[in-house]
Structure formats: structure tokens, C-alpha cells
Image (cartoon, rainbow, N blue to C red):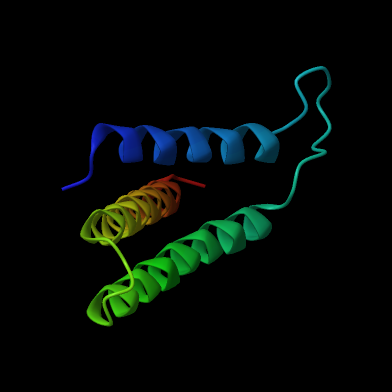
Length: 103
């Protein structure tokens, strides 16, 4: 289970992504990155968290890492994957809602 600190950091990171990815606050033009770039960054961050978790696990098995570091890395990966799954579910739900709209 993720600690409150890990969850808060994950939500803060998601908030920063959403702030930089949206439209400019002063105008109506979109100056932020595209939706596909945001998704690519989100998936990349999940992959990085997974690689970090794997590296920590391998280091612990060879006696070079602390158990607490491994638990923290695994918890961060869990939060990142959970966040990505939640976003995916919301995108699918939005798509289904759009498809149900009358033309």
C-alpha cells in the first residue's frame, strides 16, 4: 500500500502535468503540449518508476540496497500505475459517452 507522502507526490506530479498541458490561462490559444505528448510522458514516467523499482529489487537481492528503499520504489510504481489506469478508464468512459451522443 502506498504511503500518504508517495500518493501526495504522485498527485502533485499529475497536477503539474495538467497545468502545463492545458490552455493558456490568459488567452484561448493552446500553447501547451499535445494530448499525445502528455500521454507519452505519463507512460514514460510509469516505465521509469518500474525500472527504478526493478533496479532497487535487484540491488536488494545482491545485498546493496536497503529494504526501505525497495518498498518506497515499489509503492511509487504502484501509485503511478494506479494513476495511469484511472486516467485510462476515464478516457475510455469519455469516448463511450461521446459515441452515445446523437448527431
